[in-house]
Image (cartoon, rainbow, N blue to C red; front, side, top):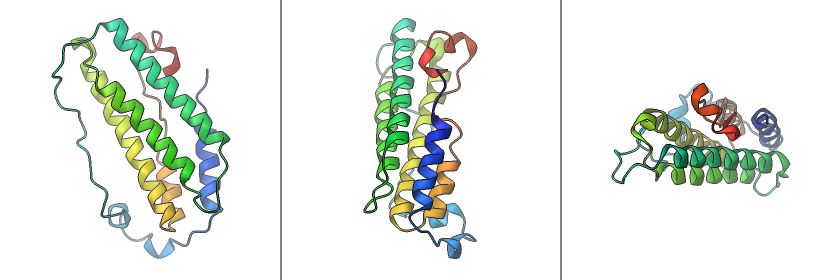
Length: 173
């Protein structure tokens, strides 16, 4: 089943762009300078595992469930209506959904053979959730141009898996 990410991002971009903007005065500033100083950066990689590794089958089922949850969250975003009071609410909800899924997956200790791939999936998911959060915060602060740019920076929300895993986790394809 194809991922609805491009359509969801287009709809979110349209919703944000329709709410006014006027961030041209900030365009010359680096993105980090425009970001909310209250945001805290997370480490790029999760800490080393402290629990016993799960079986490969259990890990792949959890990875597939993470991708299925992400796809459902994208569909909710695509079907949501932007509110005049809070046009960024659907994007913030997507960030929360993505973060909860990636943190649930991150609590598992994968088999040793999948640890590198696992760390990459977790890091990409956290980064995407952080970018979505930043985009929602910028939109709420009135900087819809920067918020739209943050949304467009997201190429894919589903992890890119090697062929050996993608066949076993069909929701990630």
